[in-house]
Image (cartoon, rainbow over all chains, first blue to last red; front, side):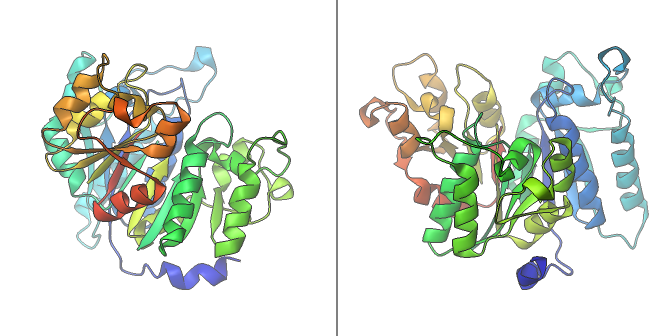
Length: 143
Length: 119
Length: 100
């Protein structure tokens, strides 16, 4: 069945700017975990990606998560993999893939956090800066 | 124009699948192409043929399948999300297929617009 | 670009987040429970009234009708569209951010 759609998906050499908007806290719902899976897959397609944390999404990258007592998988270490993908893309001159990891300043400050609270290095952008950057994207995925 | 659509909720608890369905139908009516509809998160429940809505209610599982058949749409259920929720080939409604998350990214690359419906 | 909001402004802050990031000249579509934000003379009306200075605001007619919200209750300047209009908005405006 897949073959009949193949001509619709001639994406060889096509490069798009993807933004993944994370606005939900971890564990209370599954959204944060499944969006991470999508981010990791996009690396295989060598697409540009911005991983953005807004509103309660900033709780996803809070340091010190310990889920033992609720018997759920602690997925905050997965963000390290995203950080490594970004570093690979930054360092490899043959790889045409720009990744950015961004936290919205207003959301971070509203929750009493600073960049030191996070498990990964992030760029902090104001609402206005992030809003303008959002306009430049081709595909915005939110979960 | 080429559209991709992502559906993140099942057919009952949220309106998301209804909205996505009406959007897809309207896009097709206007002569646009819908490259792929990708079902993720609880959206995979839209492909459960064991579901039996009440007789006086809309049956989105059937409606998606019929729309897919009429317009030769690619209705893709995410395998990882589906396995978690017990959606397997043997209970897959007509018109859907199970595939990887790469199909979502591929749709995003190929489509002029990708629209997300969820909660 | 197009921003879409499907949550009631009385239940969640999705509309506030959308308005915080939306740039001048972009469009907002209110649909599903988001349509309640378009009602005038209500506690949340000021949000959309303020947004209309810089943004165009649309509301999905079928969701208004389903919820019994008559069009004469809408804030002045909000434009009612059907699903075809929703498709047009997506087509006309670059990327769509769905504020879930």
